[in-house]
Length: 123
Image: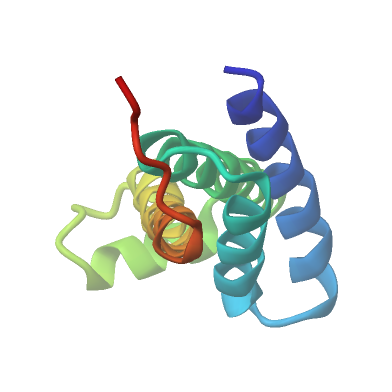
């Protein structure tokens, strides 16, 4: 049970720092590698990746939205079917980032399970 908070915090911090220097898609190999290394189950890995990346993107997008009084997000939200709601665009951004991180972490956990030796239950 301790692997979920540890994986979540590692993904949150490392993804945030990595995206300051590298492109946004660096979260994919990062979540994949962390989930594979820590060996958590698929569900725990997905939620750790989803929440770690999603929360990071939510905080950053929200902060940037506040810094420019929502002007850019409002204009982009007008182009999408969001009714011009800037905060709705921030939430959509967090969900998209969370899905990328969650699916990458899920793939990492499944990859670890695929190469792990099969343990037979002896009765």
